[in-house]
Length: 273
Image (tube, rainbow, N blue to C red):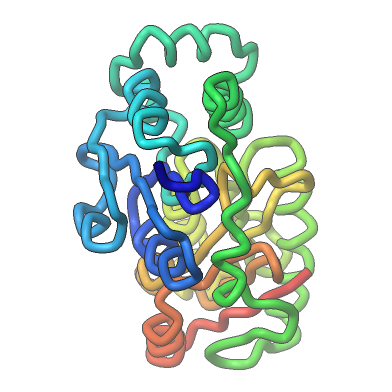
């Protein structure tokens, strides 16, 4: 039997991050990567990079744990978007439903915290994925696109302060502002919808500033803020002129494509905090 220290599990949501992580993990010495993919959520391309992929429906907690145990997985990471609301749009199995019914509050932190506890009860630890992702996590000084003007810098500072407070209250992690006015605050709908709503409220001239942060006690086992080409597409369509994110806590995916789009669409991207 293989040494369990050489085996890593991956709970893979949608978008590109699970694929990137799988490539990084294998390149950095993970001997065997066992992934759980979700029908209609996870990119099937994951099968090219993981050693084993088990396909399930969102909410099939018992089957997920059984799949890991049968493959000797004792450590796993969770990456990609698996929105908490998905658990209510499908029929969770008995174990998942039981865990959900115990929660007084249902948000990303509590729902995924319950998942971590269920995994731990069967000897599977949900761990921090950052050791494999540090190379694509920019720090202070990172910037792409046009330089900020004075008004934009003020909006970034203002937006960062508001976003940190909103995240502290477990409401969301992103805000859109313009000339000191809060146009949109991220709620249960997620970042993209917040950006779209903020862009609409910015008026015909657009030019709003979006700021994305990590929570005060952000549990990176459940979620690492990230931006990528799709985020830039949303900003472009919403006519958002600045996208700021918290340094050292945010991943930049598709770096070359993000850089190209920032320049082409005159969108300023900066790491702050």
